[in-house]
Amino acid sequence: MQFAITREVSPAIARCELTHLARAPIELTRAREQHAAYVALLRDRGRTVIELPADPEAPDSVFVEDAAVVVDELAVITRPGAASRRRELAPIAHVLGRFRATLARIEAPGTLDGGDVLRFGREVLVGRTPRTNDAGVAQLRAALAPHGYTVRAVEVRGCLHLKTAVTAVGPRALLINPAWIDRRALGVSPEVELLEVDPSEPFAANTLRLDELVVVPRAFEKTRARLVARGLRCADLPADELAKAEGGLTCCSLLFTA
Ligand code: CIR
Image 1 (tube, helix red, strand yellow):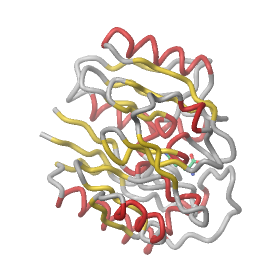
Image 2 (cartoon, helix red, strand yellow):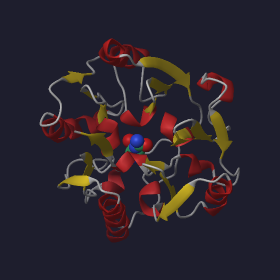
Image 3 (cartoon, helix red, strand yellow):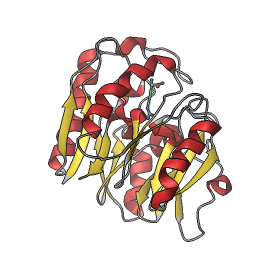
Image 4 (tube, helix red, strand yellow):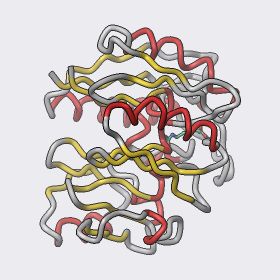
């Protein structure tokens, strides 16, 4: 079965961490409506959704992706780079413990945000960002390498996470914002197709791939048109309210099979 862990938007979302964006008022009701549409799409696409209740003490807890890296063989509970986010881990670890016999953990001094981890087949790219350090990358490698994954650090500049700058839109295709990530630094094999966002839509690189469907934030029509022209099946979702908290589409779920 295919599962998705999500978490309701915290009433404290206005106190979220921000790195590259100026603080703008976030409408809680609107954020919750958009999040509900996201959860509904996951259900439509056959995911069994495990929705955790909101945590009023954890402003960013809707962004569950950052708390864990889940592969078929095990789950790795992260240690987020922002100390305010570490209380988010326990409930996620509790749920994942029902599905994976092994839960590895990133330990101090390591830091790692799940948003910095892009799995592409057996290749795992990890963004080196203010949230993810070398010790975090090394610990993730130690946890995944015995299962046949290659873990490689990638430099990212100008955005929060690796997946703000690049996501997979097909089994051999990545969508990138070349302003935030260097094509060559990605180091993927030459047969991997690299598509680019429309330059007027820098945040469009964070798409959510559900089977063959590529979900794009509704505001990014031009990038979506590029993907459609390339023959990809696309859908959109309203995502602008949580985007003010520097969150994208991948951030709001942890997807895995069991
Ligand atoms: C943060 O700065 O941690 C949150 N405001 C946004 C996290 C977004 N998560 C993600 O990109 N995976």
